[in-house]
Structure formats: C-alpha cells, structure tokens
Length: 153
Image (tube, rainbow, N blue to C red; front, side, top):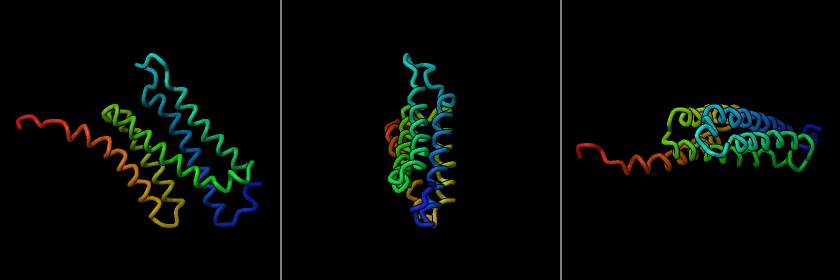
C-alpha cells in the first residue's frame, strides 16, 4: 500500500517527504521549550506548535492511506517547509533574533536544508529553499538593522 501505483522514482521522493514531515514535527515540537512558548504570554501558544506538529504527522499517515495524498505528498511537504521557514524567520525577527529564536532558524536551515540536499537529484531545490529562507530572514532582519542609527554619526 506504500505507493504501489507510483513510479519507482517517485517512491524515493515520497520517502524523503515523509522524513521531512517527521523532522518538521520534531523540530516544531522542540520550539516549545526552545522558545519558552507561553512563559511570558498570558495565553499559552504551545498548542499552536503541537497542532502544527500533529498536522505534519497526520500528513504522513494520510500518505499511507490515500493514493491522492501520496501523489501530492511531495508538493504539500515543500509548501509546508516554506511555511515553517517563513514562520521561524518571522518569530525570530519579531524577537530580534534573541537566543532560542536564532537557534530555531539555524536548526531549520541545517536539518531541512541537509535532508533536502540528500533527497534531491540536483542542487536547484536546495538552493531555492535556502534562498527563500535567506530572503525571509533578510527581509525581516534588514528593516530594523537599516533603520537603527549608528552612534557617533
């Protein structure tokens, strides 16, 4: 049932996408203690992190059950990777890349970038993912840095 109707080449892509979903679920779950989610907030946001992790795990399960989900699994996973990268960059930028937030961005880059590199036949998907992350971080980071005045000028 693990994609019998998929061509052999697509089996590998689905397996890598499942691995990315699993790693994404673990990383998003680790954001709760890493970011201290809910420590200073009046309403705990840890449910959001666990909800996203649960959705990623549900996607893995659905890819084993549904042929339609299995055929679209890679595209869905890529979309989720970009969303998680954007989410991580926005959180880090809003918190001025303090401690755990900077570590979160580095974790997403290292883990997702590395697994994407292992599962890709060329460097184009890897470079596209890393460039999108760089633009997300740079877009949020450059605004506050460029607007700060340098002392003595």
